[in-house]
Length: 382
Image 1 (tube, rainbow, N blue to C red):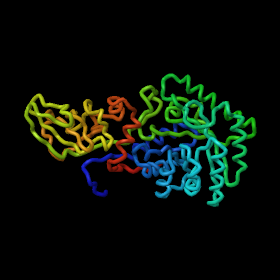
Image 2: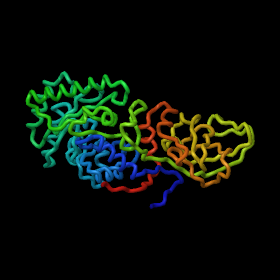
Image 3: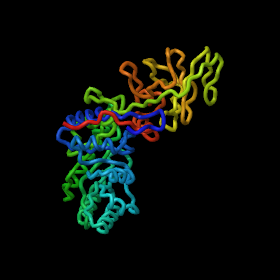
Image 4: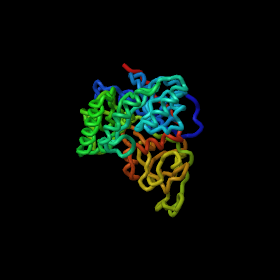
């Protein structure tokens, strides 16, 4: 393993990822898996995660941007890559060169891809988007007549083929599935309308992570697991018994400094911590620029030598301090777990998210941006 240039890291357990994928594949039945590895695989490393998906038979990946697709292609990825966000006409040649499947919801955008595909001498596929209730991109469901005419026209364009139709669930991770059922109805009606007007749909994909877990009627030909790949549940409202998952990411660092201080000693910006007794304060080289949220300062804790120790003062950009007074024998160089488990104590992405008013998705994405990644337990499929 290459030597890290800082005593802090994200550890990615590829065996956990492998097992999560197998459990998801079993839950999805006959539906193909579209591995969602946007945002650098939610902070876990898109290239390494793509390899584990590949070993498990995944033949299509989904990203958010052309830049993410380019990163995968540069790593040697030859699979289909869907770009879920709209690609403007000005980037059509880049999309053709990268051999991606862009989302489209207008004939004009598809025509730009057709022209680019002709210039590059390739056949390009696109995926038609319908907005069933996310309010983000896509044809409106009531525009089915317009959409059918445009999709038929797209299929007549040279070097272009409409591969299928997709939409995205907005409340599938809520206990109340009524709006999800409405989205399902809108999607089915839209597809039926396309088929009735001769714009036959070859592939449908609607199911996100929560849908895979709890709405089997929307699995269709392909599903798009995202957060569940990485061992996290979409929300606190889903039925976790539906799918066994193991977190893939842990965040660890080593103490770089310890000082003994008297009562009345202040620590950090704003002097938010003032010791009320003689204390030991440890400095840990991770901060909010590494993804540790500054609003977490008052609730933050770490696991060190089998004990939980609270943060002392506000989290800084690159460091934070911990009160280790009640941790016997703690020394410079000791490992601390910022997010993860020592087998007894656990600090989860959900814990950090709850303490900072956000969601676990944001926590892992942020940790994965600057901290070096260490990959553990490379796994092969069965």
